[in-house]
Image (cartoon, rainbow, N blue to C red; front, side):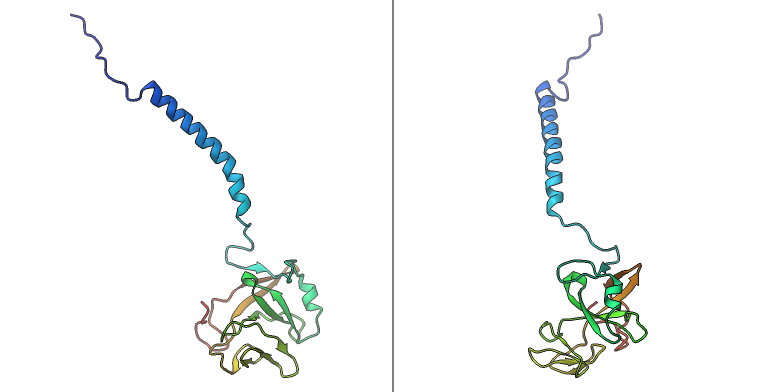
Length: 177
């Protein structure tokens, strides 16, 4: 007797194969159409991998280092820093930028405040907290010194990055890390 090939059900019927191919074609088309739409709603990454950003003005325009360094020696310039936080940069007596900037947020309730050149202090108008030129509390109710950020100038650009090292004012780990 001749050996015959057993007839078994195939692993996938013709209908299942066509359904699979149709689903794969629809999924590929939907992915190709939705990817650009999803990219539109995700903002572009700014800065570098270490979290540093370029200093900008209130309108989001880049500030060249020469613009800040043209200020009189010992003055402070307010720029938009990390996460858009207002940050004071100081022009030192030797005509360079101070290696750290001071974030303009009171540690009491988060108010923004002006630099008072007459008293040589940061003065919070909300509850009267006062800070010395380096951001250390002179008078409360603010409990902590002001947050610092690292400032570096590279090729006419001002880079602002998070301060993660020891706080030079207190010699301790920064409270904001």
